[in-house]
Image 1: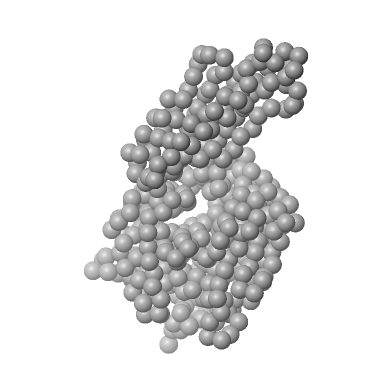
Image 2 (image 1 turned 135 degrees about the horizontal axis):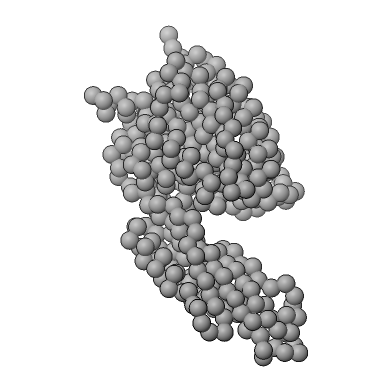
Amino acid sequence: MTQDPLTLPFDADEMLEGLRPWIETESPTFDAAAVNRMMDLVQHDLATLGARVERIPGRMGLGDSVRATMPHPRAGEGGILLLGHMDTVHPIGTLQTLPFRRDGDICHGPGLMDMKGGNYVYLDALRKILAAGIETPLPVTVLFTPDEEIGTPSARELIEAEAQRHKFILVPEPACPDGSAVIGRYAIARFNLEARGTPSHASWALSEGRSAIAEMAGKVAEIEAFTTEDCSFSVGVIHGGQWVNCVSSVCDAEVLSMAKTQGLLDEGVRRMLDLNTDGGDVRLAVRRGVTRPLWQEGQPGTMAMLDVARGIASEIGFDLPACSAGGGSDGNFTGALGLATLDSIGVRGKGLHTLDEHIEGRLEYGDSKAAWVREAIRQRLQRERAADASEERLVE
């Protein structure tokens, strides 16, 4: 008799020990060599599971991607795609301030929540499934990418091409605070701003200079005032000046806008591009950068997956809420293509993208297994079973 996947022996301590090398291999997006060291670990771990692993060279000076076809009688056919990224926002050296450590039910580390923890839980689930000799009804492919934190400029085409081969896409981005799966995401646009003024000595000839920094400072307040409840604008990066005794003629900035509808994003793009100025003492150039498309909530394939997943969750004994959310992910791309996608089914925690990034849990059943691990594992197995059952229902 085939073992029920939900009864497999998952152990929190074992998983955290296996996850530790991933967290201690820092992988900031813009350091391609560091990202590739992370991909080396991932490639090895996938190979030990018997997967056929491909290393796909990076572009644009960014790191590589790793694609793995898991063992299956129909390996290589479209089935379930497990999609995640291995880059983080944390620069090399963050481990000195935010080392991997456990404090009771909390575990800290850079990239642990976003999203190495979720990725590892997936692989551990696959490891246990394969060790138990359980054959998933559909073949499974894993794709890990290097550049999600900057909008996926390099890997987007790869993701979209691979996703369209599959019936179901699972994305273990961090879970929402209430444990919700994400079934839609807001549209996102990035902008690059360049202010160019006139240099001068900051005391000897102050009046002759035209400060690019002063111009950009004024634009920051103007841009962030565009924010409404349904469309946000945030200036997250500013670079300007080299010497305190010089009026800076150069100042650059980066802006992120997120909108609940495509129409609102289009209007936000227009407002940003209207800031371009060719004349005057200081010129401002605004260029549209990477865009994540709107993933509309309520798509039939995704909702069918969610219905089956909720049924399994109820059988196990917990609720599985769902929502549309901001904070873009690579699920934007697959969802916008109309592909059945469940996102944010990763580990729970707080402080992602900060020096307090951690995952949290409670202990249950009186043993030392953290509930966040059990629940995350269950959810991943549920998504696999949900995908398979959903396919059968749709065929019927």
